[in-house]
Image 1: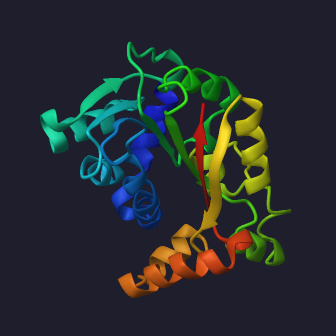
Image 2: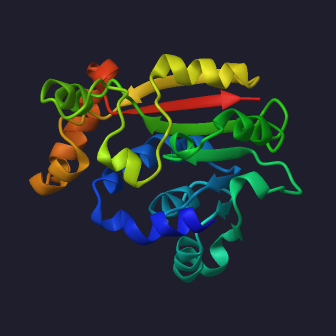
Length: 234
């Protein structure tokens, strides 16, 4: 719990390029949870929460950071139910139609254990799990290797270390992991072409038009797009 609070104190989502990636993830996920009872695992500043609220029948959140929990409760008040808990200690007393695990799985040191627990929280057969994680084959990581900043695309960057991100995913690895935990993969694809690191992208101050263009181009050059989306059924 203390480690999560330390990270939360250092990380300001609203001042990070991740906000753009969160929005693009929300654009993909929000239509898919229309009318569903949703559990969002990890909420950060609540940007995606707001997108989910516009589509979902209900949204509940489990979040380990007290900082983010307080912010969400202030921002959305009674619109959401927030549980302040580590994922490993969370035991819901209901089934969910959909669980959103966006920008989270690569932070987990034992993702298989979490996925096996999540499977029991979903409505049998019709429930859906939505995941987004960084793609290690992303163009910006490959450029980092050529520049000598990374040993290889799976090497830990300063950001990976700072924010405790041990997970290293490719589309194929994510699919294998999900299947090994007993899920059925409904859909999986990479999205958003990010040529540079988050700090460099932020410094560029990209326009809305450029962000949309990078999102669309990521569909054409999927292998080197920076994020992976996966929808799974129990």
